[in-house]
Image (cartoon, rainbow over all chains, first blue to last red; front, side, top):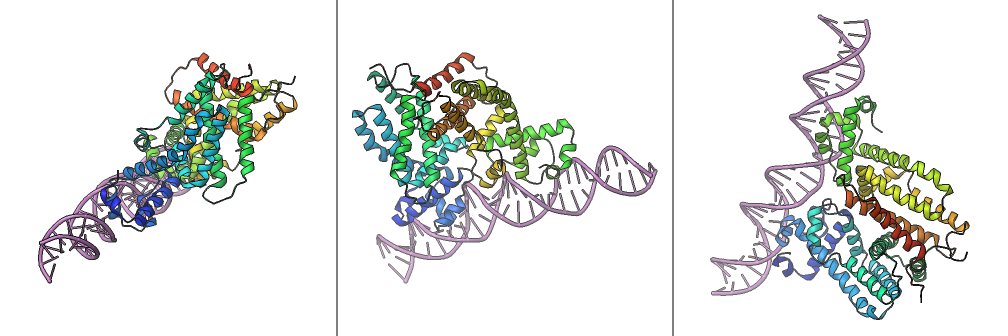
Length: 212
Length: 212
DNA sequence: TAGGGATATGACCATGTGGTCACATAGCTT
DNA sequence: AAGCTATGTGACCACATGGTCATATCCCTA
């Protein structure tokens, strides 16, 4: 957690530091990211930085926490409504929300992408500590739920499907990030919808040709 | 490419250097990996290293080339036979071969995993240069082929499916790597087969419950 | 045994890192 | 205006990095 001095800062300055850090950590990964660069970007002295944050790790965990909060907040409304939906609608919603998030907060999305690549174990575990594995549990629950409702064939292996869904959302996020990245590219809403529907179609109907 | 001096080295020494480098690059990523550490591991002086290799990049590209060769060689026989197989058999073969490779050459598999995370653009592009995108093209060809044979429903979006397959193989590799890692854990053959079959079952039949 | 080309070596260089600390400055209180 | 506390600052530290180079060592030929 940052020191009080950091929170006493005028909002502008605080935000500049935050966005500089987000920028750096979304491009470089924990070890390679540089405190010096963050200081330069946000026009503060090295000494000042260490009056705001205990550590490089302190900063990193704080930044990741902000990103996670933002994402949770973004999804919370969607999750609330989703109880009434069918599995396919639920999953479609998650997909589209994910894409929307990546477009609305490309920096945070890039940060998440970078985190998924992180090699530094101490940085990784410091961030995880709590609130991870959410997506895995979420998927398993959704799947079991849909099975009891009879929406999903009971012969489907829940664990395998959960893993498939996870890897798929990860891949889609990555794909979208590459496409829109940091630039404010205006994507074709229809294209995205069609692509998502193609994936869902495969997932639900399988790829086997049943006509012969 | 390494200098002649490197290839003039006695085989033992050469192999030690190679394995030290593989070890380092499979744990750390291009920027974080350390030449000093590689020298220490392989008991050579820094100066000697730079008599064998022009650069850090020179080493990296050479090591990656070795790994790629090994993998291509490993898959080549499988690919040859696969023309006579159905799509599901082809894909099953690729899956199992991938798992087998990860188990037989965990270091190389880890190297590949690390490469897929690589942030350094120059290192990435130096390695790619040729022979990449193979898997994507391979998948698309397999899919189109299976469509004309009537094995796959023509309403399936080839690009979406290709992406799905790619992310899936990536996820499985990652999963297997985490499970067996560097230790020679003897996995249960049946477990692996069952898991792969579960994934393929989902892929081919879809998850929709057709019984009502 | 003398000489010479190839190879081995580690001190050294410039640069960058995360982190510290003595000091300067600002702003509030008496 | 004096004093005091909270904040700002950049030179500095020890360390690690990729890369160089003068020198020492080896081994083969004459």
